[in-house]
Amino acid sequence: MVAASAQLYQWPRQFERAIYLYAMKTCLECHERVIGRDDKKFCSDGCRNSYNNRINKDANNLMRNINHQLRKNYRLLLENNPQGKNKISRTKLIEKGFDFSFFTGGQQTKKGYTFFVYDQGYIPLKNGWLKLFQTTRKT
Image (cartoon, rainbow, N blue to C red; front, top):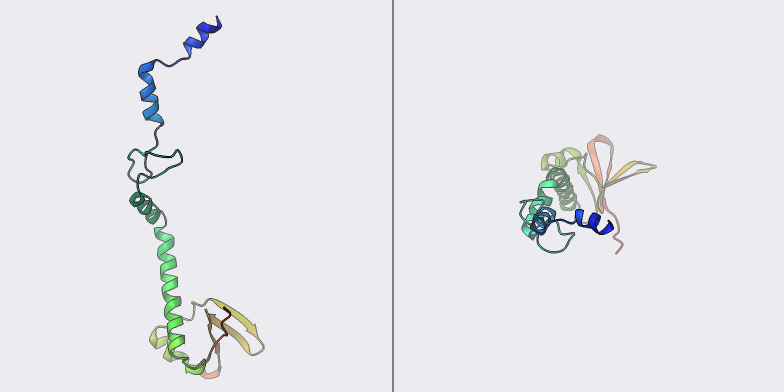
């Protein structure tokens, strides 16, 4: 009786290929058949790049815009601070495209608040002026 029950649960040979094809993985991007390792998710590097670019598009766009403004702020501070210490009017930086809402760090000091864009810093002074300085680089 045991041998008969074992035969009941064996798949007929004609269904083996159908089960194999059903179990095969498809590419997450183009839905083509994936050949290779069991944990492979994409059929090619192009599909992998396309899928990841599509998935991360919104986050990348936000980060791209923020990094663009940070680079612009850094470039403007660097241009207007060639010797490492300088004073400049706030309106002059705004006219050149500086955005004061983008900075990489800040610190409360006795004289007020100090803002940083990477290694370039500025302290707001009275009458719309800014004191620019460069921090020492530790490499």
